[in-house]
Length: 187
Image 1: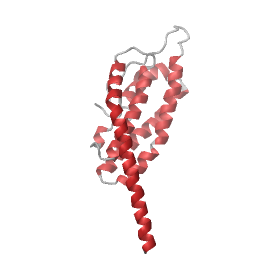
Image 2: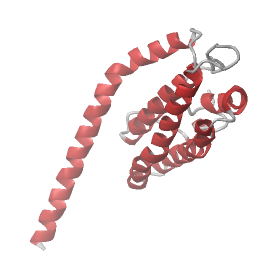
Image 3: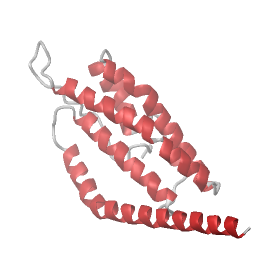
Image 4: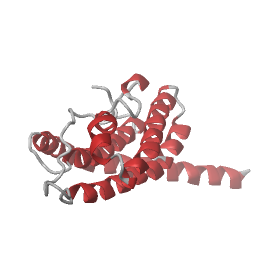
C-alpha cells in the first residue's frame, strides 16, 4: 500500500507540474494577445489577397487559446457561444464568397469536414467543462490538434492557390467578406 501511495503522490506532483506549465504558457500567450488582436483588427481594414483565409488561420489559433484558457479556469464560456461551422466568421465566408471563388479547389473542399469537427469538439469541450468533467474535456482538447491541423494545412494550401494570379484577369483573389472576431462564436 505504501508503493501505491507513493505512485499516487508522484502522479499528483506531475499533474500539478503540468498545470503550472500550462498556466505559464497561457500567461506568455496572454501578454501577446492584445497586440495580436489589435493587429488583426487593423488587418481587417486592408484589401489584402486571400485575407479571409489568413484571418481564418488566426481565428482558429485564437479560438484554441480560448479553449485552453477555459480549461485553466481563466475564462468562462457557455456552449451557446460556440456556433456550428456555418455560423462562424470563416464558415459564413466559406459557404458564400469562398464557395464562389474556390469551390472547385481540392484544398477548399478538404476544409469542410475537419472544420465541422473543430466546432463540434469545441462545443463539447465547453459543455464538459461546464459539467465539471475537466479530464474528458482535456482529452478532447488534445484530440482537437488533428482536425485543427487539417484545417490549417488546407488553409495554407488554399492561400497558395488564392495568391496565384487568376488566369484571365491576372488579379489576385481578395477574400474580403469576413466580419469581426471571435472566430467560432456568432458574435
